Image (cartoon, rainbow, N blue to C red; front, side, top):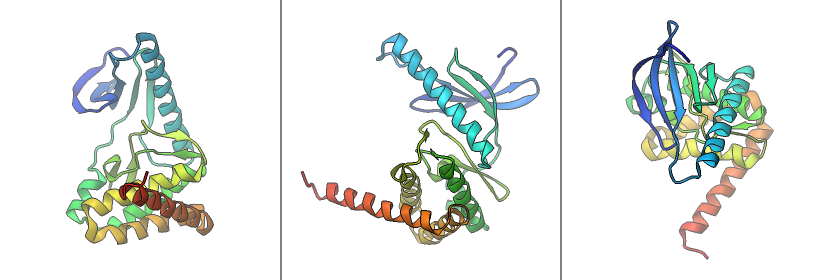
Length: 217
């Protein structure tokens, strides 16, 4: 993309660098996957290209099924870069710390968004409070770098489990209420039967974790 103005670094992750940029009067986020020197150059390029393309496709599909996430503006496969809408808002992790009013409604809407994602055969892969921005009372899901296409209940249950574990670890006093809100929103879209499947699989995941923690071979 020509005439891009760099507005500053947002984040350096393990896989990509995020920068705030301006292009044709639009404020965007540039997410560019960085080369890995330990990989063969051709393999590295193929991996970065395929992951960039997959992430963009998932975000576009998520938008189509009503999930609130940044709009994709441009994809540059040569540079393994995605240019997407810049969202100006705090992340859910910060609002949980502040015990922000209206959290229950925000998290319930987030649960509905997650259910729409799952009903479309998509798992997020890193569904934690820091990957949710909040504008007003709207939760906006970001960072689809670990997402994939799958209707497997295990993959989808992991999303809910990750969220629950993240909230419980940092905000135990409100964890129960937040999970009730998330599951209520999920049930609104996916129905009680699917929610039960998810909850049952989460129990299996916890049981496996306890087995490993005990040091079983």
